[in-house]
Image (cartoon, rainbow, N blue to C red; front, top):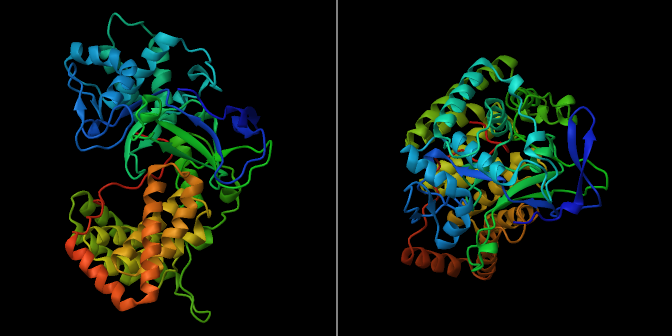
Length: 491
């Protein structure tokens, strides 16, 4: 599949960062700087039977590869399209009798492609895999042990009739996967389902307050031609005005952390010190740590410290109950925590926002929509003061809050939030993305309902009640998975 819009970008040496990408012309919010298919990609070990191994869509019924019985596909079109990448893997799995982990599967797919095409630069690629950083020298003792185990298991899996690569080169590929593997999401962008390598994307440097965002577009399943049907690619999209010669940046981590915590995470995971303006000046840290202030009175430092400690401890309990699917217990902990937080912490305090986010999501799932809408509203108000106005996380959170308000019958707030979310996702995801299309349908629905509500509230509520009785309300997605917060996948 061809790479698109490559004339919008060029490689340059970014001061203190090594190579980077910059714009060659003026761009505006929502413009696609380039689209890139994966060099290689695999589904996570835990989801191999529920996600298509070619286009990474989540499906209930998938067709299994008749030979290796491991790979699963949406339909014949996806299976045919995925055969070039699956062919060598298929016979290796049959011969081996077992399936290795996702890291080894991805390394093998990359090396089979190098065996077939060589590792030199091909058309539309701005860098070769050989020239990308592997950060092997930065690995700690435990990571180094894990790498050696992966290389050993890889050599057991690699067929004797394939080209032999040296241990050093195989280690280079594992290093690439470790620090440049991009998290692939399902078609709705809500769950991490796999990991892939996108060489051009690897050249885009990090900034905590970036001028671009990356989304995965899984193609269009209504299209009959395989060229569009299975066209999975990432898109680098501008989230504001970009001038010619300006460096293009994305955020590797979620912005909703104190600058010192973001820096720590970036150093640990990506092996560099972040020197962006938001980190060096601690921009928005004051808001993320803010406490309630009434008539100039603030709670004492001791009280604040107590509440923060209580919040941190409770969040650990929440995560444990959540992972066990004990959602009523999650709600109990959230209510307790919010009761302690509300008199002390401001609405932009990240400890409070984390609890509000979980509480609204879990209560929506349990269909307690009124309580969920109250929490989601507070969460969105906090997010609006912290995130960039065109941040994808903000768009997704606002969309979820809007749907929660609609379920609660609060049509005016629901429609306002849906419109706000739609405006953001038009920039971050574009008009053809499945989630934007879903949102457009919801926006039209809420607009129609709002008109009805404004004409006659009583008739509106009567009709709504009748409609809900005849049609069972859709269950909200189970709140098991964390939202995708990090750009690159770290095993």
